[in-house]
Picture 1: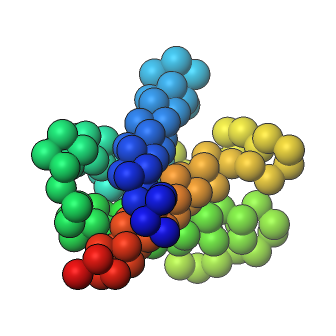
Picture 2 (picture 1 turned 180 degrees about the horizontal axis):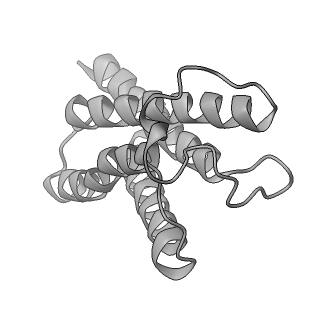
Length: 145
């Protein structure tokens, strides 16, 4: 684990940048309007770019303390979004669609690469990767203290 520690934060930064760039590409280049849940996920992802960059610059080994809350909240929103998306698109009509009642539907099929890779799944993956990297950083910090 000590050999991986120097790469955990840069990898989290890279993942956050790719996720932010991807979401901006979908909305600004392809003109796909984000749904309410997509906005919530962006709210948790965009600050991670700045926070991870500042943490790298300051060499902050305790960055997980303020990255994990955002990434876990984003992961939970994204997990809910994916459950809702796949339930509706597989023919299950849940009554708990919540924030998807107004504006663009949270279950709109914009793209499905390979039949299953969707925008909500990309967000779930990005939040999961950052969360996992921060947990690894936390574990490596515990071992050194």
